[in-house]
Image (tube, rainbow, N blue to C red; front, side):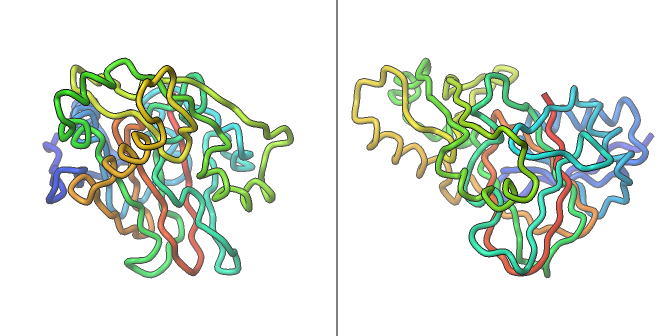
Length: 265
């Protein structure tokens, strides 16, 4: 079986993988997992996966996670449809940096997006911010200070407004605020990362200094240009990222876009 062709982005925020995901050997899958742990986000261009094949590939990474805010696809229960229509007003779903569902006690580890329908090239990009790099750039004193710091994360954080229209159309019947507490520094295979969703963070636990000042600093630091990459979608593209070490954000655009999202526990 051929070795995977892996091409990192210019600033090592993520990595492009050249491989037909319909034909992945056990050895290739292990290489994909290693690359995902290393880079945090992988991009697979112009794939030809059916919904069944998409579900089969993502299931290799673990158990599907439920998304408490929206109903799943009417036929494929692992898939959540993230759609924006050209007639929609307001922000795009997920516009603003975040990790997925950090307000849950056990947030999903991985998120997959498959592009079904996208606007013209250069519109509807997804931004990624590598939190391995963001952590490494902190001063030693600050790393030590936040080593055991915990944050409180809410489903009604500032990013909640971006899903209001989708909740109105496809929301579950009992949407209510969900909160959870997590350490804002995580270790993944011995490599440390900032794990703090700006879109969901509402406060820090037992933090002595000025919370507002520090939260503003951290939120800005996490998304410095040198840590970020803008991914341009084409139909069939698939991206997978680790929510423990990667922030992401939708961008503003006009036109129609439909994505299939699967999250893995």
